Image 1 (cartoon, rainbow, N blue to C red):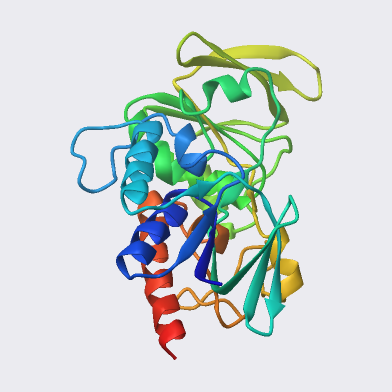
Image 2 (spheres, rainbow, N blue to C red):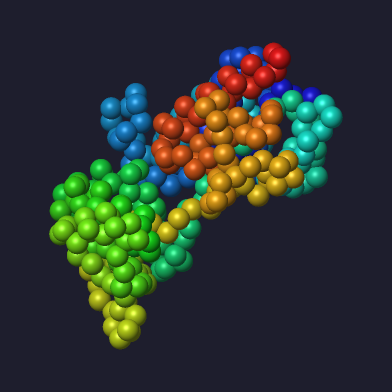
Length: 302
């Protein structure tokens, strides 16, 4: 019986392991993929405190992993399929059938950005192609970029990026303004070039993205535009499938609802990072995890 089971080894999960070890909690940490999570896809990180020189996401992930391992964290490469309430606490069920008994659980499974599955998409992630304007926008100061997606979020991103970039294109499949009237008015007054009835079909470049090919839906004609960056604002899917057996409440978009202590609706279960639907920043995930482990420690004392 362990004090805590950590599900996910991204920035939130790795931070949780460090805090759990320093607070003398027994714990296990599971990660289905590679330690570091989506952070591994980040090309350059300039806004994480303590590192005045820019570093890659892979470098920061490696540092976090080494620090967690320094505190005896053993990251187990296993997928967790369910969490079940038990008379003694919880059972965390892995895909290979192991049932881990624990007193508390931290869900740090993140969110997977949706893909468009266009040609060369995977190749340029972190090398000119991004799914998060607030994360990577400042890296494109004075550059030419395009934002792709439907609804209000891409409009918000394009307006934000207009204050950073030299030139911004907004690409949508439909001829539409934002549903929010204020956003629509701001878009009309902006210098953003709108490509209505267009979709992106391919991204091109060498080591970094250099252009994108857009197709006009009415005519089928394609045109290639030179770009330094492409932002795909098409949403994300939180990793919350395993919560269903425990009755943990989620919002309309599937993100886990937590309070200021990172507590979920199920006492003894906590959530941290992107899986909660908060601002998708590494520093936010780290802070969430620190709070969650301290809350779990408090819960265990009681």
